[in-house]
Amino acid sequence: MEQTTHVTDDGKTIIILTPSGRLDITTAWQFRLKLQECISRVSPHVVVNLGQVNFIDSSGLTSLVAGMRDADKVKGSFRICNVHPEARLVFEVTMMDSVFEIVDTEEQALEQLPREMTT
Image 1: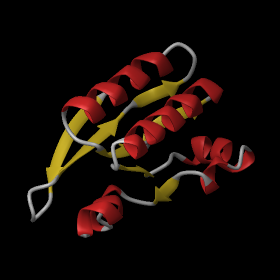
Image 2: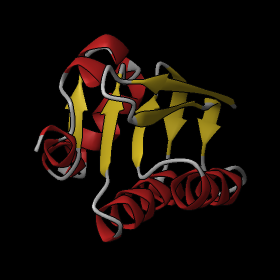
Image 3: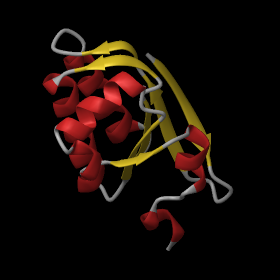
Image 4: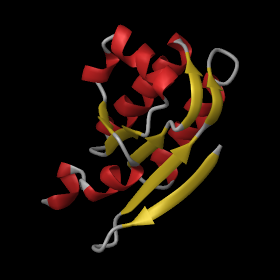
């Protein structure tokens, strides 16, 4: 899993996590721990780029929900971008596409500053 950071013009840090392959029962717990660590130690603002995830199951969705809740608890932000077409279907069928803030590209996720950061 790739982890990068983006620093905004006003000095705020946004974490970009890019998992790859499958986000399922065998990998979701590692991803969940990585989200917790990033949010608690680096920044409460997270972008998850799912462009390299071609399969996601309920465990993967659960880890994303937990990450979003962790970010919300510390007044952070949580965005998902670049959802692989095969994974997008899971978001649509489960109606999780209405729960998460999902944008098409990583650039869009970084351009749209979190509401908390613009005040």
